[in-house]
Image (cartoon, rainbow, N blue to C red):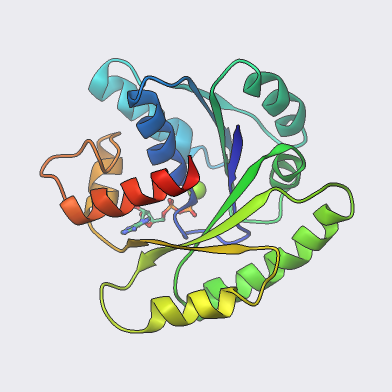
Length: 210
Ligand SMILES: Nc1ncnc2c1ncn2[C@@H]1O[C@H](COP(=O)(O)OP(=O)(O)O)[C@@H](O)[C@H]1O
Ligand SMILES: [Mg+2]
């Protein structure tokens, strides 16, 4: 299965979610290829830190750029149980290439209006994709959700208007454990002291996707 974690907005948690998915599947004994399709190379950096911390990242991380994401992604996906593509936060050639080959597009979005507007723009890109292929399964996940208040539900309701996108009930609340774990090259589920709420939210997302 090829999963693209993408959006045309930066800072919504794409890389955080991509590296957590890759690490989690790998620690479950599944073979995983993480494709870093963002020039900023954050997923690659995370993996280097992880290798240093654990001696072995458990998954294979490959940096692939531009249109090559399509050809490389297809051939790598034949060798691994899961191929996870982390894209940059713009409408890039790499993101478009990933959209041509993935089975699932996971779109993290924060419950804020700028982020919601970006999803509106993304749906136009998805219309273009739909003219050349059947769309992948597209899931929007609210990340950096508020621990309280009504904004999370309001944004989910607004996202529900986009027929191409399934809005997941599962959400990831904004919690310090995410950046803390990432800075050590670890998934939130591996980090100590354990943030049980963050881990539960992530595991619910995992169950939903896999
Ligand atoms: N659920 C969360 N709670 C708290 N911080 C988060 C959460 N998700 C992501 N972050 C932080 O937000 C910042 C942007 O995340 P990142 O994964 O780099 O986004 P993107 O890849 O979409 O640009 C990072 O500092 C990351 O640690
Ligand atoms: Mg990123």
